[in-house]
Each structure stands twice: as structure tokens, then as C-alpha cells.
Amino acid sequence: MSDTVEATPTTGQKFTAEAMGTFVLVFFGCGAAVYTGGDIVATGLTFGLTVVVMAYAVGRISGGHFNPAVTLGAVLGGRLPWNQVGIYMAAQLLGGLLAGAVLFALGHGFDGFVAEGNMGQNFFGDQGSGFAWWAALLLEVLLTAVFLWVILGVTDERNEVNVALGPLAIGLALSMIHFVAIPLTGTSVNPARSIGVGVFAGMDAVAQLWLFVLAPLLGAAIAGLTYPLLFGQGAAPVAGSGLNFGGGRKDQNVPGNYEAQWNQGQQGGWGQPGAAWGAPPQQQWGQPDPYQQPQQQPDPAHGAPQGAPQQPGQWGGQPAPQQPGQQSQPGQWGQPAPQQPGQQPPVQQQPGQSAPGHWGNPDGDDDGRTQVRRPD
Image (cartoon, rainbow, N blue to C red; front, side):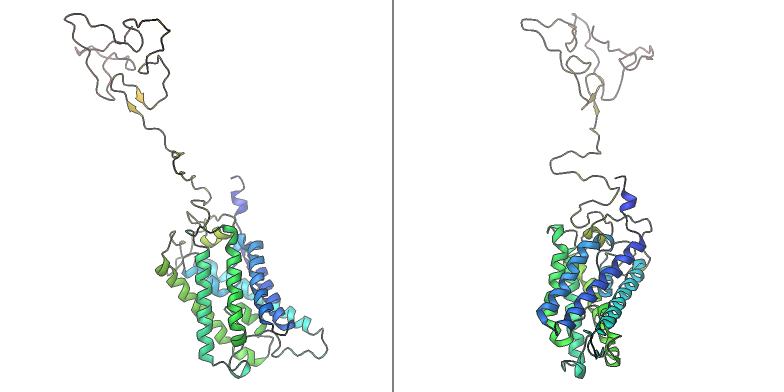
């Protein structure tokens, strides 16, 4: 545990992870769309594989959002504080724009390259497949909501799926979405992906960007707000998330793994029950609580604590083992002294009460009370 502070990602590291992941997503995904001639299978798998690869690579640092819609769904779903949203979205937009700029520059490696309409941009209506704007809007809202429901479900701390399969399930979900939507809108579900290449694809593409910004954010908001209502919250929401705009905990320490980033250090983060740094180990089934001391109660006979380990022959313990053939002698340790005719029996002490002059109470006073003598 000595490296707890070092394992906590800094804001700069999260910014870098999100910018890099979004760059890879847009560069390879839109690059595949351009250079394969819009092959649906190749493009869909490329988008999904980039999410898988980069989530495994840097997901432990930032959670691997690579998408402003995912970040919005995470904060509304109680997984991320509002005070980190600006950093995440700025990094994602920067990564998308850098990827679009690199694709634009590389495209000029072909003689006569024209970027307008040839950057893997999104489209609807006359600029694309002829799909109506309202249908494109509805489709992008629906697909983004499904994508966020999958992400929130996979990273739910109650999910018992192997933690290593989280990024794989999310990447496959993104590929599945692309297989349906590529012929209709080119598939956005990600404003950073749409803006990153759209600004280089001509004015017609720029004019249609509003839909591919609004629809994913709307779908993500629906999923983030409804997931706890549909499936339960699980762990308590992160401070400053959801509809609470009070910011997050500044001293929040987050374990360095992908799923814990999604739960931002909650107790019982997915795959890490009670694993927030500094939290006490959880009691295992059938095992004693590691922090609970055995409860000691006074022995009614001698005032010695019950539950404490006792050796044979100890005061208040068990009688000492006897050798074969040996008889117990009156007054031995563990054996009561014989009572003489006419002698009153010793007074029994209440639990926790010591008589004056009793063992453990040497400063007794001679007030006429009956004393219990130590057997000898």
C-alpha cells in the first residue's frame, strides 16, 4: 500500500489518456471508412477494436471514455463528478480534431485529393443516404442510449463478469452499432468523432454537425438518468454527480484499474468489493472480522475475562492435568477448598465485581464484608 498516492491518476494524466484514446479511435475508425471505400464490416470492427485496445491501455487512468456522450452518461449515472467533465470533454475534442487534421494531411498524399465529402464524416438527407433528419436524430439518440446502457451495466459494481472482459464487451457493442448505422448516418454516437473529421469535410458536413452533437448527448443523458431507475443504483453515487452539481471530493483516491475508474473510488467498485484505497479488508464468509477483538466477559467464578486464552492450571482456567493415578488434593489450583462443618460458603461475586482484598483488588478495605480468599 506504500504506492497508493503514486497509483492515483492526476488530472494531467487523465487529460492525456482521453486525448490519446480519442485520437486513436477517430484516426483508425474514420481512416478505415475512407481507405476501405466504406466497407461496413471493416469499419465497424475497427471502431470497436480501437475502444478495446485503448481501454486496456489507458482505461485504468481515465476510465476510457473517448467520447463526450459517454462522459455525460457517466456523470448523470453517478459514476463521475461534474468537476471533471470539462477536462474530459476538452481532451476528447482535442484528440478528435488532431486525428481529423492528420487524416486531412495524409489524404493529400494522393494526387487530386479532395477532402470535401471524403473524410469519413457523418451525414443525413441529401448529403448522404437520403435518410430524413428526424429519423437520423432518433436513430442516433437510440443507439447512443443503448451504448451507454451497455457501458453502465458492464461497469456496474454488482456485475460479476470477469473484470478483464469489460472493455471487450463495450468494443463489441460499438461494432454492433456501426453495422446498423453506417449505411444510414455513417454512425456517430460520439460528438468528438463527428466534429474531429466534420470540420475538414466541407461546409455541408459542418452544417449537419448539430445533429451529431445533439443526438448523442441526448441519448447519453437518457441512459445516464434512467439506468439507476431501471436497474438500481448499486453503490452510492459519486459525490457531485448526477443531478447534484456540488462538485466532487478533491481528496478522492481512485484505484488504478479500469472498472474502479468508472466507479471513481466507491466502496465496492465493480470487481473490487470494498476496494477503495484505505478501506479495511472485508470479512470473508465464515471468517472472523479482522478488526473485531474477541469480546471478553468476566468469569462469574473468579472475575477473569472469558474468551481470553487460558492455560491449564491458570487462575480461573481449567484444572491442571493430573498424572495417571494422581488424586486431586483439596485446595489445588482449579479445585475448591473443602468446607468445614458450620462454615458459610464463599460469597459468589457478580460479573465484573471484585470483593475487597480479592485477587486483582489488593487495596480492599475492611468494612465487614465477607472476603473470598484465594484457594491455597
